[in-house]
Image (cartoon, rainbow, N blue to C red; front, side):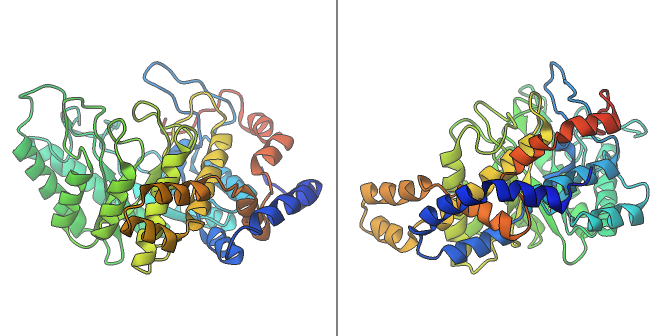
Length: 424
């Protein structure tokens, strides 16, 4: 469903005076508010096509109704989010869940929605209906070369699809691993995987990137063939300068210092991007910033410091994507909340007094360092994020407008109560 300019204008006019008071207060305490606003206006977070419908757990899935039944409807929903927040100008597809039937039509539809295509994602963690060999015991690591070749060819096909869409990166996440001691020869599994990745890497266009995503456990529980950031870094280093590690915030063991991992990968020029989500216990795929907002801020603090040290463009030199699964929330509301939380944390990191923090670190002044970081974290940057959105033509409060317009109810009327998203 389209959201008219008049609806956004009317919504903004009702809350503009209150927004202006809050904005003036926040900006009065910031050294370069206009610089921060310009960075916020450029910063975009890609929406994953698989998160536009209700997710679930291994126990069950509860449809919310009105879910996108095909890729065209997913693009329309992503465009709706971008119309509201002006910060979701890209969509990331999962192949074969989202193969365009009519490439020209899909590209035109995305362009009309103001969307570009972000990383394309391969899928060798499921068996598809027409595939010849099973991935039950792995894909790129499999002991059977025929299975490995099937997985390689799938990834190359995903690259081909991505080229047609105008994407420029491939994300490879592997469920490969083992559940029991002795089940797998670790050295051979690593070598098979590396050899497979090399064939896929060779098929990359010259201007593409490969993101190697790691995960500590699940679906295998004894070992994962790309189990942590060190293994992802090892693969990326051996593959070449177009290969990078991708960090999913939920793909770590409990209490892992993700901000340190980010800093080191960035320092080694091997950080490719992010899948943002949040978690309490494992790969919970919860709304970004809903559980550990301070950690999200600390990650962005390392990103801003490290990217500035290398003169990188905050908006374009890394891949910014969400990877979430929604079982109890309206997925569109959840995505609006995630994008907002990401941009709030980014804005807070932009406010850190970097020079003062460096002095505190050089003087081993842990107390001062904590005060500097927490001063930025405790600053209410929501008015800055809202103002950046307003200047780009979005809604001051996207979630409230979404609810006021009864978007979900209209989607249910259009698509039906039993509609279920493809690929889930």
